[in-house]
Image (tube, rainbow over all chains, first blue to last red; front, top):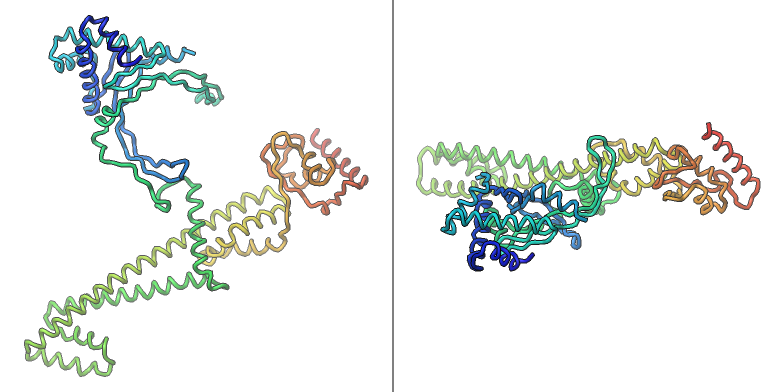
Length: 93
Length: 398
């Protein structure tokens, strides 16, 4: 589902204007980003958890050139889906 | 920091940010979450422009091992939910580490790597070193080893000398009598005979201090001090370099001694005479150049072995047994008749427990045809081989 579809569906369900929904979505994303940047995790019942994870630096090899590169450490935002979602996806064939 | 934010807190945060009632925020979030859950678990991908993309990805089935029982089992293929944050979000999250960039490592950078790579590296280095020494043919390594050591000693001596000089000078400077320094300076430039008069002079100077002389001595002393310091630094560097090279040589020597010894040792028990020669020959060609430097360095065990076995080196044919290939096939290929597989078996008894079922990947040695009087055109030889085959079969039936 694309962003547009999501917004229009939310519009229907909530009965509010498109701009309002967009603004709400934007600030929701803002909150997730902000809090995760502070290494907090955000748990949402029925959906899953957003959290920031540290990745260590590592040496990677470019398979075509054979050059070794040092990949710096980084923090990434990960989303862990809730078990129910995971299982439902697993059952899908 | 490391807090867990729950749904109610999220509602509060959103209400604050949007300056709306909590109820509105809650309604919105609930709808959003249910919609997200629905879409995501239905196997559809979901994009939120300001956050990222949720997308189910197919994971192929794969073989794994039950950790408790050690039994292999296959994990069936399934979908997995992935989340890819938008670039803006990624950058915001990675802010504290944003200053780092990917760096390309130089090829010869010292680093803890996979053993395979470190396997390659020392070999190269040794090659380079032997190349360098290659000019002197007969006993290159001995010279090489000796050279740095003597140099080392020399530099060490230099070092200690210069250190001594420095110390002497400092003490002199403290006392503000420069006679000795002057004396040394002169001694460097002029023959020794003139030393004694020089020495007496400064002492005279010392008794009745003349300003000019003192200034002059001061200057020379300073110059000397500088040169000595330079020489000292140089000496230290040279000493360090030489020590490093020596250490490297020693380490390489030890490494190759170990590896070559191991390879010989592991091959030994498995193999017959012919094969011993072969493996040693292999070791020989591969590592002789390498072995040489090391034994002159540290150990003199290896060369004897190598020398011994090199003598009876003969070209030995080897064959890798692939899946679906039997000894008979190999025999047919090499001797022109299937019956002669028995000789291949005899030759490789140690590595082939059962001639009817040779493990794929086994490297067998093919004995030369003369060794067992193999001749595909000779029916006597074939019958003999068949008899031996019967015996072998009987043995295995028991």
